[in-house]
Image 1 (cartoon, helix red, strand yellow):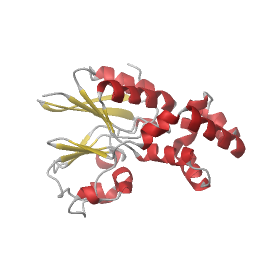
Image 2 (cartoon, helix red, strand yellow):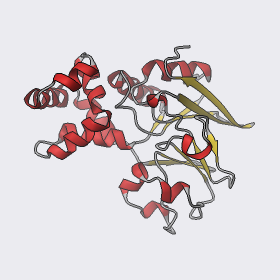
Image 3 (cartoon, helix red, strand yellow):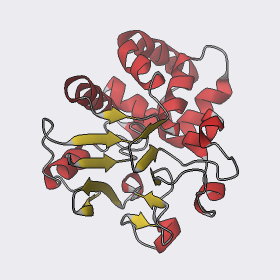
Image 4 (tube, one colour):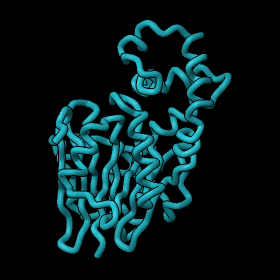
Length: 247
């Protein structure tokens, strides 16, 4: 059985992500890597993370899914006339992504960047990093194996066929998913998006007592930790690194 490693909500935490891969002894030619969304925003190095994730996908066929922050960034950077998309993104950690692409300090960008300068930078990123935006915009919303369903946020338990749910719910859903049992599939749903603190008051991986869900977002970008779920012949295993840990 090929070992599968699953990571979510990297949020520009390049140092921690690579420390986590080392701790899990990730070997690209041997292991299957599944990344379930939110590569940008909040952390310090979104640009480097996007470049690395693109490389892992192209060279080693890593599975890369879309998260809500990835969609927010694309929507804002590709929009010409909807200020609300820009403000929604910037107010949810987008300043950090912007700073990583222009090589500036995030606090400086957030405090001193004027709107006209933001628009200029936005158009520059759109041209200079078109491949990044094309990549993030084209990411799938879920990935299935024989026993697991991987998704950024979750699935709508009210639907008989989860595949018919709105794209929005794959990357945004919270309480309706994790507060109700999954009945539309026998597969275990592995998800990020919602910090595991919501489920068991610690940042470690959460295993639903019903066996239908596994939450892996440890809230690294909020000062906690980044988790990696291993799925192998011996069942499940967990790895983690704290924010600031470089291994």
